[in-house]
Image (cartoon, rainbow, N blue to C red; front, side, top):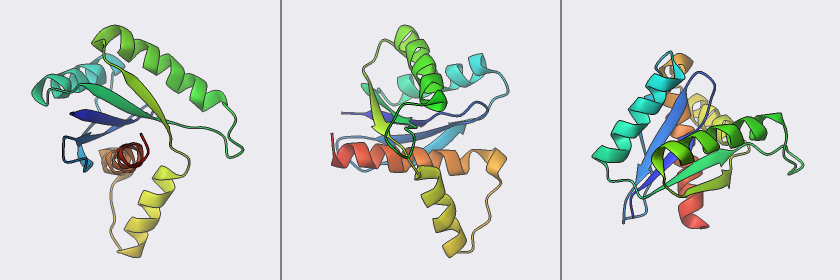
Length: 134
């Protein structure tokens, strides 16, 4: 099954891909200025890669409760469910971006945060977690 992983953000949407091998890889993020353009980018990936399901990072509070950011993701999920008609699975994403940033520091790699690279790497962690714990 081809699955798209998403790390949602107001300005950037990190994206990752996994196929039948169940290995998540980061792909080009959606960094366009307007949400409609970011959604068009996602739509093109859905078609190109024959995506059958979406896994989106769900930003629970550290105590496991649903907070403001999770509610924003719920609103985004509504939009993508209506537009793309694909199953969407929520996956706890607590600290995924932190893990990516720490890994980059450990290897002394500098990445422009505006590039969306960190977001796509976070989407990769989210998707790989889902694949390991569906």
